[in-house]
Image 1 (cartoon, rainbow, N blue to C red):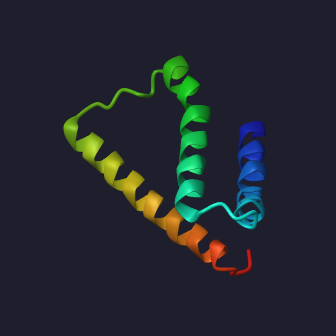
Image 2: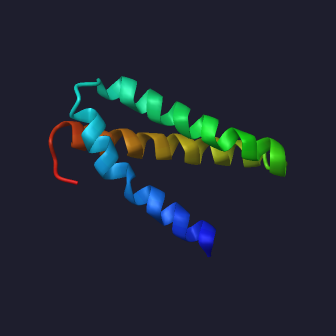
Image 3: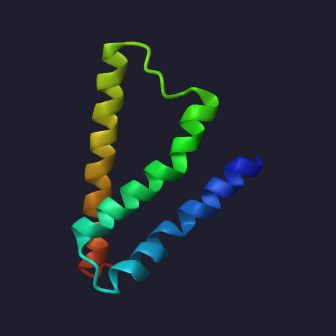
Length: 88
């Protein structure tokens, strides 16, 4: 329950935080690369500690890659809206 609460709390800071960072003048592409890189490095230790970095089959890999690409496109469109000035 503690982990779920922490995840919800951190997710709640994503939109206002990204609105603040994009307001400083950083480009959308740079922001998305920085955001993705930060998430990658935060999650990387867990991949080695809990051994969840192993993909069981090639089909499973393509499913995960497809879902990751879809998520990336959704986040880029979301942050594009924020960079254009849409409210949070």
